[in-house]
Image 1: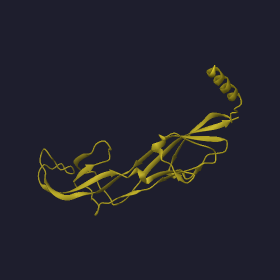
Image 2: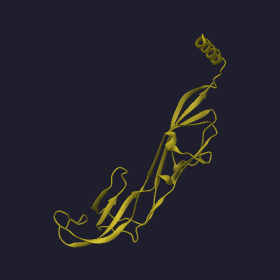
Image 3: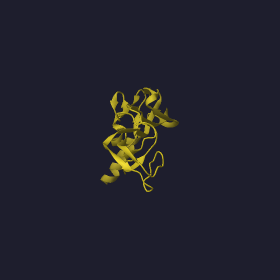
Image 4: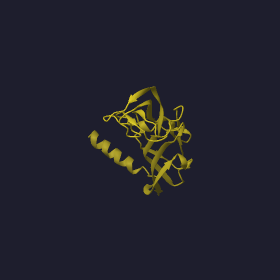
Length: 189
């Protein structure tokens, strides 16, 4: 009896609720740090569906230099020489911290990890994306055609160590990237 009364009460209550409109898909928006501050237009709602941040690769001194004798099993990566000795610098390659990248909603930083990428924004809400550069800290610069021993930390699941020669590495800023994918809906009465 109580169960039937509860169902009847819920049914009568639900008839008394009025919806404020239906949502109609309008477009997909992709914002980046160069988009500037964007405002959700009147009569629309936005749903943030994904947040992607990727730091550019930067280099820093890893540990002291060392001398290496090249051989057929370990040729010079720049010249291919299988004999001779070089002074080799040890450097580390890492991603700029993604923490340098921020999404601000009405001026307040959004923590996307806890929201799992699903955030609804009503009309009038402002969205700003900020990507802060980091810097190569090598001093002095690495000239072209200079072999080095690299500790590559750019893959979060695994690091690699190897001899390399990819050209010149300069001291200076490294860009970060930040993308926000948004579904825009029209509010239809």
